[in-house]
Length: 215
Image 1: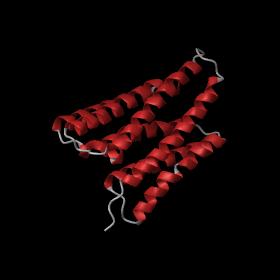
Image 2: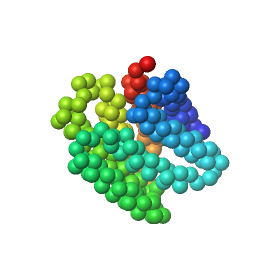
Image 3: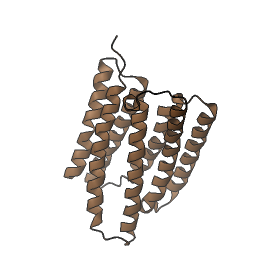
Image 4: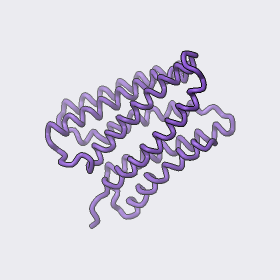
C-alpha cells in the first residue's frame, strides 16, 4: 500500500469516528446513520481492495459491486426529503435506469478501459437526484441556513466529488489510449487522493451537524 492509499484510508477515521461517537451517545439521526453506513461501506471496499491488490488478486469485481452502492445511496438519503410526488417518481425512474445501464456496462470485458462511461452514468443519476432536491428545497424554502443543513452539505459535496471523479476518469481514459502522456497518471492519482481527504473532512462536518439534540 502506497503512502497516498494509506492516507486516503486513514482519512475515513474522522467521519467514521464521529458517526460511532454519535451512535454511542444515541444522537445519530436517520440522515447521519445513512451517511455513516455509506462511509463504512466505502471504507470496507477500500480496505478489501487494497488487501487484494497487495496479494496480486484482481479487485475490479469489488468496484463493480460498489457502483450499485453509489447509485442507491442518494435515493436512500434524499428520498424522504421530497414533498412532491412527481419528484419522487423522477428520482426512482432515474435511479432504476442508472442501475440498468450500470448492469449492462458491467457485462463488458473492457469495463475498466471505459471508466468514463460508468462515471457519466453515476454522475448523471446523482446530479439529477441532488439538483431535484435543491430545486424543491429553495422553491418551498425548507432551509434557512443551507450550510447547517446536512442534506444541503452532503448534496454539495457529492456533486463536487462525482464531477471530479468524472473528470478524473475521462482523463484516465485518454492516458490509457495514449492521447495524453503516461506521466500525468501519477499526478491524477495524487490529486484524486487529496480530494478524497478533503471530502472526508466535509462528510465529518455533515455528520456533526446532523446530530440529534441531546435529551
